[in-house]
Image (cartoon, rainbow over all chains, first blue to last red; front, side):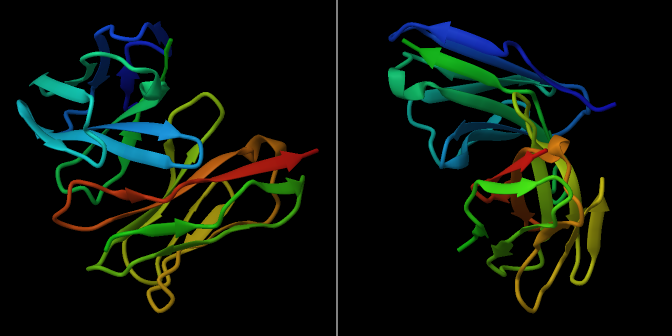
Length: 113
Length: 112
């Protein structure tokens, strides 16, 4: 059974902290994605990666960075967390060509105080 | 541009009612079309998909038909259950792009 796991289901951080969200997939997928989900706004793409050490900005990259040192792991980094980054963060992976299904992790609900 | 438009929710139904959630997309290239479902507290999971015109995707009693002439992929179910309460996302993916486009999601609430 395919699996995408995220390091935390719930996370509470303080303004200014550095935050790491980890995502691991066991399907040998080339593509990995980070989205944030907010009420009324749907899913918005933050960053994606199509190969190890490769990354591309999505629609809302400001305030975030990513790291992909190994094929199975894609990390989202909030360099200095702010309250407007309180959100649900979803990781996903998929096959190279993008036409196939995306597989999502369970999400991390981040609250920044 | 590339976009997916879904009907706004929430959609509120009684158990055993008929469900339709509308989805239209912009017709760039020959996209594959998807419906994803997100149950409370979980991530999205694929519900069904269709890869070419006139294909019908189906799963768990849900169906959607890829209509190229109307650029639509409406989700239907003949008799909803309380357990179908969730948020439903329509999505499209075009060859050559790594990035699918998602609609904003439609919340479905089914009452006993």
